[in-house]
Each structure stands twice: as C-alpha cells, then as structure tokens.
Image 1: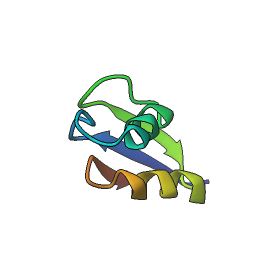
Image 2: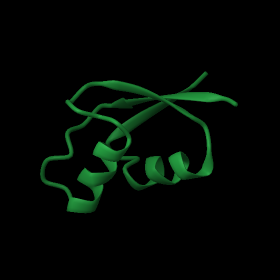
Image 3: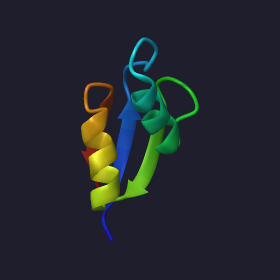
Length: 59
C-alpha cells in the first residue's frame, strides 16, 4: 500500500474543535511535525478536512 507524509505547517489554534481533534487523530503532538500514514480514503478525508493546515507529500 502507498504511504503519504503529512506535514503540519500551521497551528490548529483558533480553529474549530473538530479540526483540532482531526489533527490529534492523525498523530500530531506538536506544531511543525511530520507523520506517515497509509494512503486510504479515511486518511484522505481527514486531510481534506484540515487541508489549510497541512501539506501532503506522496511517496
């Protein structure tokens, strides 16, 4: 299965509570971090919800 790297480039402070929860659910603990996930529809939906906060790099 393909992997994707997700970079948190903007802090979720000041955004909706559900967007903050999505950031945490993706595995981000601090600002300016990178996590790696399998490329599937669930992860893509989460990325779509917080697309203004993250940058995605496909491997």
